[in-house]
Length: 538
Image (cartoon, rainbow, N blue to C red):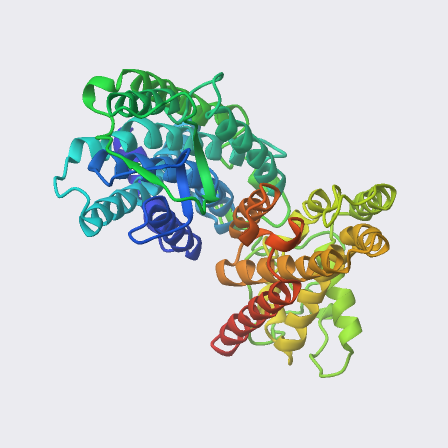
């Protein structure tokens, strides 16, 4: 059984590490490591100690990068860890596994171990970055491997084990498998990260032991510790920082973090196996339309079968080249029409908007509520209280842009259209329309309050986010990257990180609306270029 679980986990990990989303999150992890422990002069910090900055010993570099990796990968890593079960089902792998003796719990255990391998590979790269930063910085030439790696083993890895288990659970619980699950996890992540830095609650980041050790070091050096505060999160600080020499956590100080880590790891296994209550080992997939696979001892489901009321091509009738598509996408020859170059941009826009809003019949009601709320609330200077939260409402719509998740061979059919550029522009404009709908009320109030720059900033942000969604979906061919990146961007904005304020809510600290609009145009061009290259090389 252990051999089967290991083989399944290794095969799944090898498949997922080739996906674009893995590369994006890995590069983001390495970039965060460089932000947490910058080699040169940098305003950005991940670990804050009031107005102080630690010398780059092995323990300090290992701790700050491990904390940054814990915060980043617990959100971004969750996005790429999810969806493995759905991919097995859609690709037919799940139905093949259902014909084997592999049980439900063993299958979920394999996915859990695969997630751990995914996170472990990123942590190894991050630890290598931390070592390189210490050597390049040159504050301390003595490398202490134990103190460098101990925070990863005690803090980051157990936390990510819990994230890996939650990813498996979310893939099995109805209602949490799609984009709604990503938003639920974002709320959970906020509570966990913020709660881990307060005095109460579970100390998932080991902050109590870390801060106590640093306070002892500062007190021993004669530095007053009463006003020293600690925090974890990406912030910019223009103050001149003093330095302190902290060797990091040693094996003798690992008791508290080790106990918390053991609790997190134990909970992770329980969370992952809890999904067996809902997971049916793909046995019920044959009763769902559009799902194909192989029955044990039988032929592929969907082959040679006609749905009620469908028209079957006559024997010997030729199917147009390029329209064979995946099994389970039944082409009705009677409904096929030849491609032509007619039509208008408005018709294409209408079609893309209908696709974007498919299955979201109540979405406009929510947009109307936000618009009415914005009109009834007066702006507070250059900011409007409703605007940031209104820009969260269309996030699941935007995550559909740039790809056709679960669309069978829709991409192949649309790939035969004579004008991919026109289709891409229509898809982009279809994403802009919901953005304008949710910011309209705030823009009207800002203009009425004499804040034209703030109104322009809101409109520029309404252009930027759909363009970002289009690029993320086009590059990765899925919704996960945008669903991960956008909440992080939004979180930085509401925390008044000026460089991330895409809506201009911080006034003069925010980027100019023209700069945001220019970035939106650049992202849109990049997305259309990637789509055009993919279309040309099909």
